[in-house]
Length: 261
Ligand SMILES: [Zn+2]
Ligand SMILES: [Zn+2]
Image 1 (cartoon, rainbow, N blue to C red):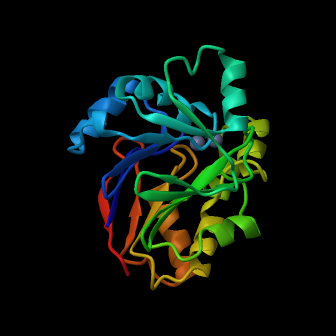
Image 2 (image 1 turned 135 degrees about the vertical axis):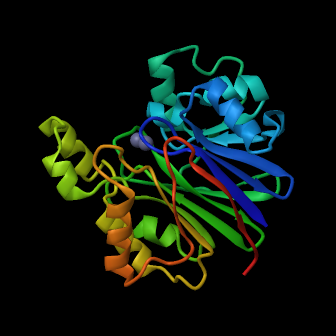
């Protein structure tokens, strides 16, 4: 089985913890290191057992705590060359004392007993990727921080058993918000964030028979609400599936388990 839990999800910090067999990894850590360590322990896990941290891109809500956590735990940090360059340009010492593994954004690779399948996404970062984690026949897909769905993104996420999917904003709430016009355009743009309607439409295009759990993630705290997310899902699917969950900034979501189908 695969089990996965979020330590926090949203623009103030993202961190997803995943276990499959003897392999334990995280996708991103945008939380302060001390908070991340405390939340990992609160999930019943020894941080020292972390094998790797997969980074999606260089925005602070994803990478802020990665290098500090890697230094504390000895975990290898996997990131694209573009993300590494962006980080290095910000601080030449950012990766000191950390074991890095540079990855190709189109090339699957083995990590312990899992296969990691990165795929590129349209987002305003240097070389952003998202991931599918495969353990035997079980597949967990993760998709946040993208402005729009592309055919390649949609293909990459076929046949998943679990999905963590960005429901960033409600377009009407964003349009009416007090955000500066430039920020509104960035969020709603092709390299920004996925709105509820697009996420729900994508979900409706997938085979729900196979999906054991779907988690709405990276909700905007200003321009979204659980009710708006649920309304969009209901409109696209006719009803909200029983396997649908919402991740929060304060507490992410608790462990979910995926079994072979
Ligand atoms: Zn983000
Ligand atoms: Zn981002």
